[in-house]
Length: 212
Image 1 (cartoon, rainbow, N blue to C red):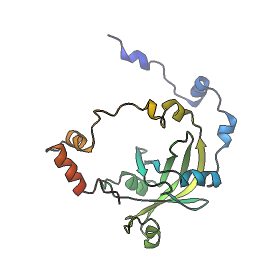
Image 2 (cartoon, rainbow, N blue to C red):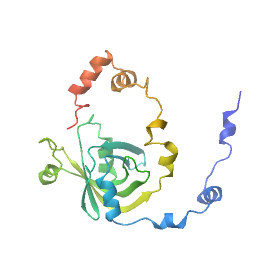
Image 3 (cartoon, helix red, strand yellow):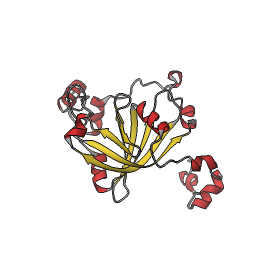
Image 4 (cartoon, rainbow, N blue to C red):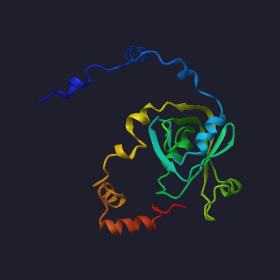
């Protein structure tokens, strides 16, 4: 039987060792970071219907959470400020709890069909002001809160990873046949009893499948 420990015998421990393996960074890639939301950043945010938020608590335990809505659901308030409405979910609030402990966040904006992505870094706060929440009303329903991020850095990421993955090419998508939906997932991971139909209905009653 193959010794799995052999796979981990050689590791990288320092930045110097890392650079020796992958080489020096491409200088324009280092210099492309901007300290505000210029027209390019604004254009990506305006056309993005989906993003990922990274956060960490004071022990540096990481959290990654997806967010999605109609393109442009994240509002640019000024060159250094964006606002993201909260929508009904499972109320775990992992990201929000971490923001209360450590406001530093990172966001990755995706635009369907585009290989490039936008990375944004800053500090977040949770706002419940009615005037701001009203800005994000959908069908007369207001979000319970809005996460406001003070932007410190932003950069457009190159498209290589998206090209390699074939993310937007349906011909390269893997089959989703047999992948469990939320009902059987909750049954297996949360050890809930009942049929898939019963669990799906319970999820609806709990608001997990309500959009707004």
